[in-house]
Every structure is written in structure tokens, then in C-alpha cells.
Length: 273
Image (cartoon, rainbow, N blue to C red; front, side, top):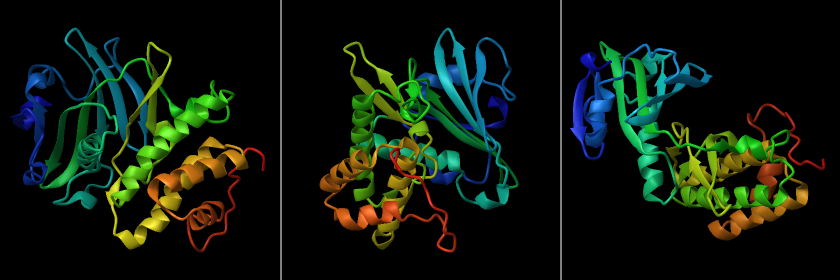
């Protein structure tokens, strides 16, 4: 990979909008030597394992003596969408930077870049420090190994709803607020810490469009988690209290949610019907 990229080295990754017409990468100073060891295609071996694949996106865990990273590659299935525009991976980096500034834990970004041909996006990638000893929030969903730990499920929901509220108050639509996009790690004292990942689709919205965005984010989360109706009501009240939103319209929007206005698909939102 390295020989085809114009590399910009910095202590922080800045000025991302200047280079959307060529192959380039920004690499943190302390990661440059490690970055030069990476090649595409990535070899499958004991030190490089594919850990996730979906919709043209591939995530590998790469372990060497001097680094342990997650390498996310987007194959750029629709390159025309990103003509003279940044890729989803680039947007993900910018969102990592933004959310970190809000105090929301995210993985440390070590490198980010794009490969283009005649300005058309071919591939884009982001390299983050791998967060070890984690499990994702699907463990708290029905069928997950912690589905019966009610107190942990509630604590998981409250902390992440608190952060979601901070995001919404800044008129940011998450768009993918699912438990699978939240990593959990148990600390030595038994307490849990969380990390948000896969933030490529978060975007700034006009204030007048946030009511629908709030409902959609909350609906995604509660539809996945399947709390009881009483638990869901208390968690929505908790969210509304912290964001100074009126409870009734938010609750109505969640319970009457339709993904498309012309479709009337009904969702089973509660574990108790």
C-alpha cells in the first residue's frame, strides 16, 4: 500500500479536505514505521485475521510485536458517490475526533486514507488501536450470553443513552445506534466501560429535522434490546430528562415508528408484547 500513497505525517490528523483527488494517507508520527509494514491485499495468517465482513467493508485485526491494530477497508462499491467528496471512512475518522472531544470513548485513530483513480474512490481505510478484551452490545440482546443480567442491561442502556443525548443536543444524527456498534469491557473492579465504533454515518442535521432523527436512533436501540414496556418507558424518561425533551412525543414516535412513511410495518418493540 505504502508505495502508492502520498503520506502526511502529523501528531494529529488534520486538514482532511485538501486531498480528495489523489491517493493519500495521514499517519500519526508514532505509527509511521508500523504503517510501512502494511500491504494490500492483507495476508491471512496468525498475525492478520479477518474479524468482520459486511457490505463491502472488511475489518482485520493485525498483531505484530510492536503494534496491535484494527484495519478497516471499504472497497468503494459506488465510487461515483464520492467524486470530489470524502469517503465514509473519512467521515468516520471525523466523527471519532468529534465524539472524543465530547468525552465519548472511541478507539484511537492511527492512520486514515483513500486510494483513487481519476478522482474516483477505489478504496478507503482507517487504522485504529485494537481494543482488547471486549465484547459488543449484542451480548445484552435477546439470545446474548448476558441477556438475563437485567441490572447490567439497564446500566448499559443508561450510559449509552446519556452519551446519545449529548450527541443529539449538538444536532447530530447517529443513524446506526445499535448495540453491535458499542464495545464493552469489564475493568478489574467489575465495572464496565464502553467504546463507540462504526461511526461513519453520523451526520449533522438541521434542528428542525432532529425530532425524527431522535426517534429513529432510539427506535433502533430499543428494537434491538427488547426491554419490557415498563423498562423502556423508564429509559425513555431518563433520556428525555437529560436532554430536556418532552416525553410524550418521543414515546409516541418510538411506539408508532415507520421506517418509510408509505409502509406500515409494525415492530415488536417490547419483550412482553
